[in-house]
Image (cartoon, rainbow, N blue to C red; front, side, top):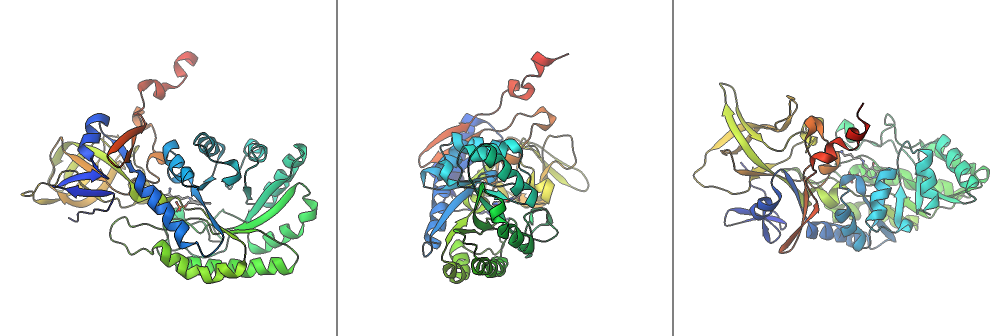
Length: 422
Ligand code: LLP
């Protein structure tokens, strides 16, 4: 089996560290399962984007949906990042984390009236509209509030991002955005929307995109459209290229942010407007692991099983998308043979697995495993299924580590049901 390591999660004397802290030391305090994050990873990746796109006027809006922990959001905000939020709840989190409303994008294919109202009330940088009806609604609400809303139109560029169908968004068959001809018609109706200021065009192709070509194609198509609008008297101040930049889960070839910038900067420069980016996964995924303990092991004539205390409710991705997360021991023992095992959790579902037919060093009950690349779409997609309390989140910062969310207690599980019990 391959052992992966990085500047942020590395082995010293055969023991996994996050930055300068042994994972074992953290787990001694937190118990398992536990999400462990490297603050330095988040900071470095944000800087990668800022440096790579420095030849153009640009801003990064961290897509909070990837990891909404307040301290994670704050890490980006402290670096100067804006945020992209997909709901009132994410907006609430972002504001709690100290994000400046003037650096917040409100996204979402189906925003409620109260979300739109809140967005206008807070004077967010922009509300991204995804349909004609939504634009009319934003206009009506803004007019009732006596305000002008900054609105961008999300355009579906109809480009194949070559990613998992569940996380592709920029194809005509996907529910996101409007097509270019609808967008053109809406922009031309701008005088009818007297409480809207159209500020830009937005796109988002999908997630975990591993090649630059979908971006190159989409930026080209969208640039043509931008110039068409300009020639028709519609002046826009930004072009938002969305997120979707892929990361390495095992050994897949993925472009670097510099390579992406190199490929699309020539077209972006020609636009002469501000470029917005909304990365989520690429800023967070490889900055986190899910630490879990092997509870039991067993074998039958067909298979070996490692039963871990992390389950599908903690990390949904393997089961939901068939996603690959590399799993390796926290302490490497020489003298151990390699086995092929299903790594499964305690939840009552056959779909409760972290990996299937995975080659891994033989591991015994009580030993720790690290599930890698769990810093995005991990904790945020977790649930309380089987009345399991959600895992704690721990941030490592050099030699120190802090709980940034504790393990839930049993009261969290029942919320107000007891007082409402009939
Ligand atoms: N902007 C918009 C409008 C989005 O819809 C998304 C993600 C992002 C930015 C950030 O995309 P990223 O850079 O993280 O790829 N749960 C799935 C991923 C869903 C992504 C949804 N939209 C997963 O676990 O793979």
